[in-house]
Length: 211
Image (cartoon, rainbow, N blue to C red; front, side, top):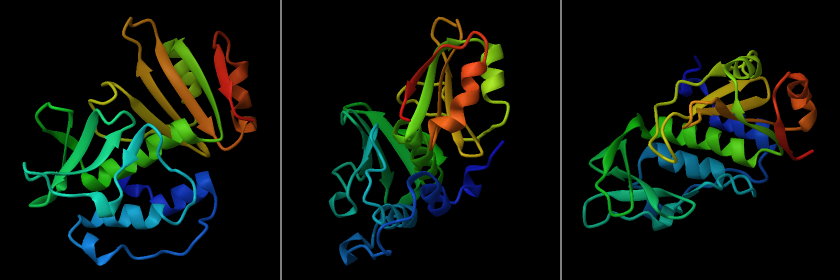
């Protein structure tokens, strides 16, 4: 298992998005109250011109505010229906919930969750990817043969059961289908050439994106 704490986000982003386009710039003084991991994430992400998230949206640090319930929402899903927040009194704890539902404590600390989300977003934003629906256990085993699972805590959004794996220049996300007929698997890489071996797996039917 890969410990999320061993993933250096700066090196990770360079691997997947190339060298940053600008030097690090400090956040405005008005953001000093934000938890340190959140400040570090925004400072790092601002060095790239690319949008690093698509299924989720990070609220700009200047617009993170403490609500009447004492919580500060820092991230939402793409529809704005699911939210993640911190309590400034305990800034390393994360809470999440669907809109209008009560907050529940996340399985991950803020630092872990920010790494988790950054890695997961690559699955949807990488230049090249392949997706198989209802893949068998055997196919999944072959797909993951050169990868190790990242020991991320479980999420309730977008559904429970998602698992993330990483190898040399590849990331995979797998979730068992509701019908228990197999696994939905996404595998991504910087180029399709790094995924060409997947086409040789007997019984696997891939949908391909990128080049």
